[in-house]
Amino acid sequence: MKAIIITLAILFVLLQFRLWFGEGGMQAIWRLDKAIAAQAAENERLKERNQTLAAEVTDLKQGLEAIEERARYDLGMIKQDETFYQIVD
Image (cartoon, rainbow, N blue to C red; front, side, top):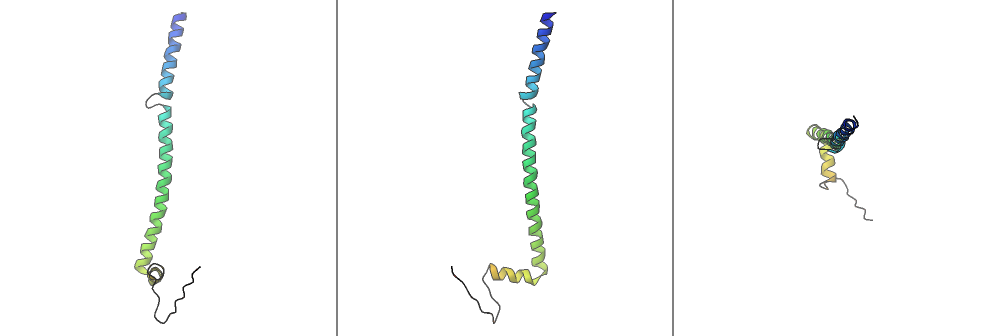
């Protein structure tokens, strides 16, 4: 009787070991959960960036103000009869 209990206890420990530390065990699941959470955060960040870019594209297609702002800041252009002052630190 004692041998059966010891054998069952050893089998139980081996099965628990595989459950917690073996391939596809709980540690692997926890690692995958962390990776999924990190990817979801990255996806959310990229989704917000894409929405910002889509709004900017729409603004550039429809409004002249956005085009004028781009021309001023990116290309350094000024309007006719406008005076440009550059302040150097």
